Length: 161
Length: 163
Image (cartoon, rainbow over the protein chains, first blue to last red):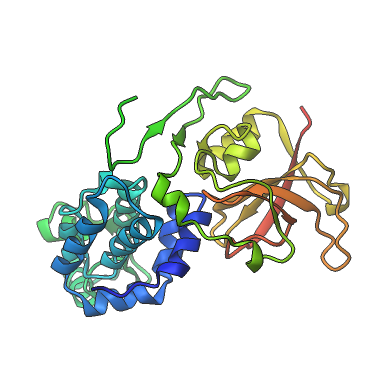
């Protein structure tokens, strides 16, 4: 049984005017941050399934399902990205929107020093990937996500400062 | 429209700006019976707010403000509507009138919320007007312009069709 502050999140869910608002305010909720520290991703995937597989759901179940998705965003980027593929996001109105927001925000903007790409890669991995905004100036602006970095398909550098 | 049990049901209606640009929108077709039964009554938590109707997920604030409460309009469409429909920003708070549109922005300049002004600025402390706005999937609210559950509000602006 996972622990989520459902009442607080219910209010955020009902008052949210967009998926972006839901994303922002759910990520501020401590219970979801705690959830990501306590639970394994596999548990969250199962808990999500339990809450979304029914045809008739309560608001609480919908809110908790969103909460589980947002808790996943606190994990390491590569683990979270893999986990998202295991969720049936079409069961929630904003499921796919939240994944899109997560992937967009997880894009990494880096200013690389003269040490260049190798240094940047070391620093990205040291930071654990995910939603990183890392700046070392002066240098070159690089924008790519963890998957691109890992596969070496990023177009580094993309722009010069 | 195909309704799939357990999946959200959407419908899109045709909405265009004055210039003929399509406005992306989404009608979420009502809460299920079990969802409706579990929506809390928040009226006690907002002493200066009157909720005008029952919770209704079909439209949001921007859908109420710009699409006659018919559908859900995303914040990304709002500036297009303001530009295409001949809105002009009102510079001075004292010039704001009932019928004007209020837009709330966050600290990144993103649009958080919108509503319709229903009184001249009269609050003695804040000089803010009263507003009717739709709070997400919840209800339409009649409230002091500053009293909304959205945060962080970094800026508000007022708009009127002048062209």
